[in-house]
Figure 1 (spheres, rainbow, N blue to C red):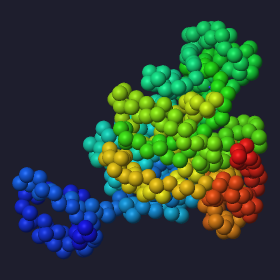
Figure 2: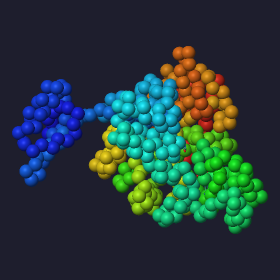
Figure 3: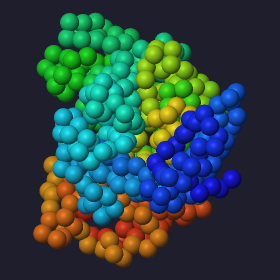
Figure 4: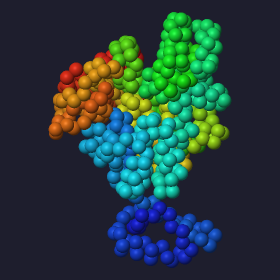
Length: 480
Ligand code: AMP
Ligand code: GLY
């Protein structure tokens, strides 16, 4: 029942049933009234009173892209968030939260800031700080260990940080994935012989983080051998290609599955499809992503069930069996071959631009979900999803993903109707909104189906302009 309580406590342990009312009154007098939910349960002689307060938190979010703007917007809808800092953020997050100029990988600066501002939760957007071990850094530091980090431990982050680690995990836990072997400079000639046993095209993957560029798909055997040597012997991707995974090529349709886990319990978030190539009809260079759609229209309940039982469950159970702490997002890249889901990669964060369609569809309180992740009781919180479709289209700087210019003034944002605008590479310069990256803005819309949603995104994009602005006009065109 509703109860007038007070104070910043969630649980009171009291021996004398007469005391709580006195304590509550005292707290009320000290801090002013607030409404909470009051539960009392008799437990032998002791009576435990739990008061669910509307405690508000100071949260620090790391990252600067469209993903972070979307996460920040959703977290700020929560009554549980009092203050949101974003490090370093962009012009979009600056409007709704407080940007701070600290790099997400400068752990010592983050520590000082977290102590100074009494941060109570750290949410990690991008992979770099996770792979560098920010979870462990906070956990092991006596001044920070009380701050929950939403993201995996350093070992868990190896699912993205090392392709070989991910493959070994998949095989060990009998999760469907492409056949593979891995090689180093010392075994490069063995790698060339292994290529000869495969059918083209050949899939070569740099083991480490290579900013999304580390996967090569090559038709010609001799060219594949040359690239293998370039990666292993000539450090084509620096240290990231000191090891290379060679994988069987899978022919199918790709989609992404997102999971939020507290390490034991999990929630499957909406599926999404992203459009990775720069050119229409999926041609040209790979990018971070040029658009996304959620849900993926061809995913039915039979396929979802296969994804859950064969992939999501064994992944979360595998983490437990291997003693890997993991409190955060798992992004599973899948290829569907003849109706069967096969894992092509794990990422240990949300996708960008997938976040810009997945997160707006979540109707539940995201901060409450994060608290449950931190407390290990995710099953106690429900996940409500907006049944409408969401689409997003990325506006990018001309030249991206190769060289491009920055500092172009952006016009037309004031004319957006019925779309959400997530900033990616933007900043304010001399009072003007200007481009500050390759991917600049994501325009997200809702519709009863994805066709209706994408139409809205394109109608609004017509009103947007910056010099050399480019976007793909075919997002969703491959789907029915
Ligand atoms: P990854 O970084 O592992 O996601 O790979 C980047 C892209 O390469 C994927 O999105 C796929 O389009 C493609 N890819 C990766 N592995 C395979 C594979 N085994 N067969 C076919 N395509 C693949
Ligand atoms: N959009 C793909 C990624 O975030 O890795």
